[in-house]
Image (cartoon, rainbow, N blue to C red; front, side, top):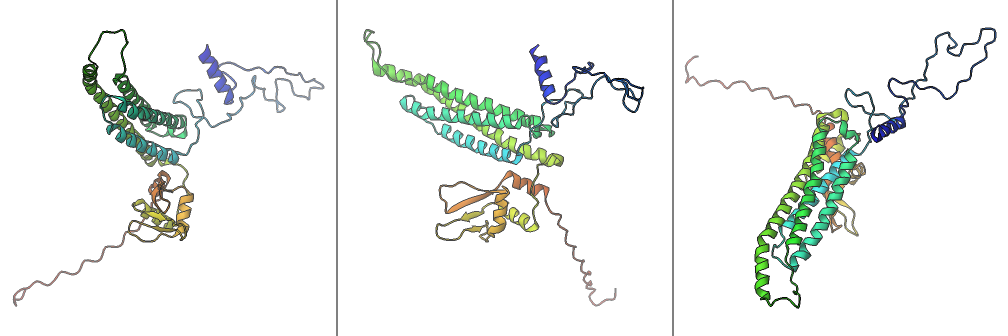
Length: 351
């Protein structure tokens, strides 16, 4: 059977060259000459112990993960940059949100204008579908699948492909239901062209509006699922720190700076003929040297903006994980001693 052959080939590639219950015989075995009896027999080791009938199996070439209660190894887990995948999922969700805004603003008026508006949006949805498939393929079979709770995240990411494809299908249906103006056959019966045009537009208008609204709903759902998947990966890694990725160790000064940037509002000013200046949300300057170290370690990212002079600075998923995992233990200041109670006013009388 094809399934059995594929499983055998995959197991042999991992270095498991024997089947349970079967012994593998070598192709040829030379019989050593027996002289005065001092040499070891073919089925005996030099120390006199019996030789095994089969050679020991070769060790696996890769570190493989096993299915619970299953003796057969499965495909080895690939190591990926999980914080980078989280950032890409957030970017994908932001693009779904932007496309949802465009589809919501479409005018459902039948005619050629609708065709020109809807066509580019279908192509944009297909591009987002392909990107979601890439994200799903990268996470599938990676080390993240060993983290408890990853199955729900993968199922949610799979639903993004289906939901976005439905949105593209609804827009394609709108194009199919959109009446376009054209001439009838010359030998046909005479008709009132304007009346026919108005009738077709009146009948198609509610159908087109419904298709556009359904497409917008599925795009909004896709954006929500992207953000949910990104947050779920962070949650899973936080709840199970044994699966956390390798992160650079931060000094107290770097951690404090990363906290300031995480509050939002940090901007980098890079004029053409002036030195680079970085300020936080309160307008306080940030030293460029530790800032450059955080940017090199991909803990922060300078947002892409049309203007190079002023750029937003955001904390990446790796930076957020570093803040969560390397949170310093701040010693609580001792509470001040309670002042002695004030003397009671007895009105000149002895207590």
